[in-house]
Length: 395
Image (tube, rainbow, N blue to C red):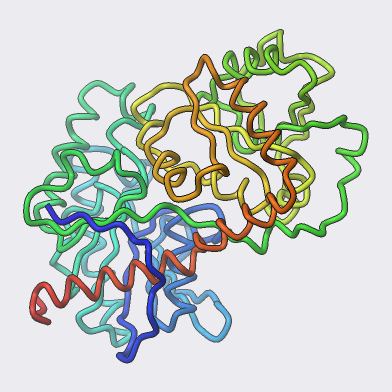
C-alpha cells in the first residue's frame, strides 16, 4: 500500500494539462459548497479542460466560466420520480443509461485519455468504460456510515459492496482523512491523503465588524455550519458552563431542538449567512469550535471549518478527529484537539494563545498552505505519478 502525504509545494508543469471528467453529482449552482465543485473550478484555472457531470433538471451541455477557462456541465438522466442512487436495478439502469451520454460528451469536446474523478461509490459501472485513461476516487466521506444510509436496512452492505467493485477498477485513491483509508486502500493501489481546502480570500482580516456582533461581549467562540445531528449540543452546553465568560456565536441554520442550557443571553443565533458574509463574522470572533458527535461518519470526516477558522485568524478547538489531528501535527499551537471532557480547558488555552502578538497572522499563513488551488495542484501531481507508475500506458 503506497500512501503519500502531500507536504511540498506543487512545481510548475512543463507538459500540457490533462482533461478531467468529474462525476460530481451535486448541482453546480454555487462552486464553494462542495469539494468536487471546488476541484472542478481549480483544475480549470490550472489549465485543464473539465467536464462536470451533475444531477439537475437542466438539459444538454452547458458552460460555466472560470476566469479564462470553461467548465462544461452535463446534466445526467435519471429514472423519473426516483433518486439516482436508489440501490438495485434503478441505480444500474441510471449508470448504464448515462454511460453513452458521458462518452459522447467527452468525444464531442475532444477529450482523449482523460482522467475520470469519481466522488462516490455509485459510479462503479463507469470506471474504465467511457474512454478515460485513469480512474481516481476522491473520497471525502465514509458514505457507508452516512446517517441516511445506516438507517435503511441492507443499504450499508450494498454501498460497501458497490464501492469495492469501484475500488477494484481504480488507478488511484485520494482521501481527505487518514481514517478513510482502512479497507479502501488495498495492496498495490496508490493512495494519498489530501485534506480539504479553503478560500482564504473569503475571510478578509480588515472586514468591518457586522452590526449583529457589536453588542456581543468578548471572548467570542464561533460555531459555523448546519446545527444538526453532527453537532453535539450537550457538549457545547457543558463547554459553555466551564468557560463562564464565553459568548457563543452560531452561524448557520438550526435543524434540531436547542437544549435549555443553550437558551441564554450568552448564545447568539445569527442564522444562515451567504458565504461572502460568513468570513466577516468569523474574523471578529476569538476561537472556532468543532464539537462533533462521536459517530463513525464524523470520525472519517474532514471538517471544512477547521481551515476556515484558521483563515479567519482564529485558533481551532476540536474533539478528536483524525483529519483535524493530521492538520494539528502540521500546525501545532494553532489547532487544539481535546477529549470531550476537556474541551472547556482547551478553549481557555486557545484563547490565551490567540492573545499573543502575531497569532492571527500565523493562523492565516497556515491556512494559505491549504488553498483549493494547492489541493488541485497536488491532485494533478498525484495523477502524474499514476501515469509514470503505469509507464505512460493508457487503456
